[in-house]
Every structure is written in structure tokens, then in C-alpha cells.
Length: 64
Picture 1 (cartoon, rainbow, N blue to C red):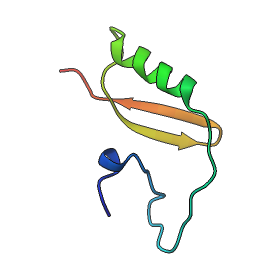
Picture 2: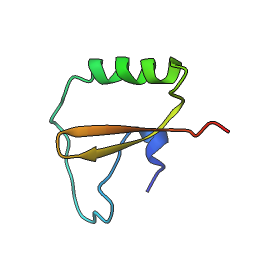
Picture 3: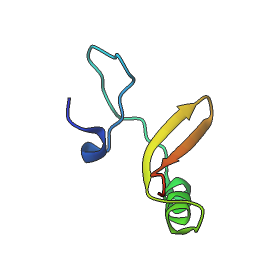
């Protein structure tokens, strides 16, 4: 499977089978939030997303 960061598609771990698209969600607010996090002093480059229920956690590169 191609790297998720290169394709922009994130798959459920362990999923095997056929899938189809066609359901869309406007992500304007998420895109703006990611930009603010990446530009903030306490944030950083977003390297992952974690979905849990109705929540999305942004995972950022740790600053050393």
C-alpha cells in the first residue's frame, strides 16, 4: 500500500477488501486549524491524524 502521507488517504489498520469513495466532508476548518497549529510556537509540523469518535487529534513532530 502506498504511503498515506503521499496519497492523502488514511486506511483503517488491518483493512483488507474492496472499498469505494463518494462521501465528502468540507475540511476548510480542519485545514485552517492545521495551519494555525503548524505556525504556533507550541505546535509544529503535523505528521499524523488520530480519529477517535467525533474527535480528531493532530500529531505533531516533536521539537528537540
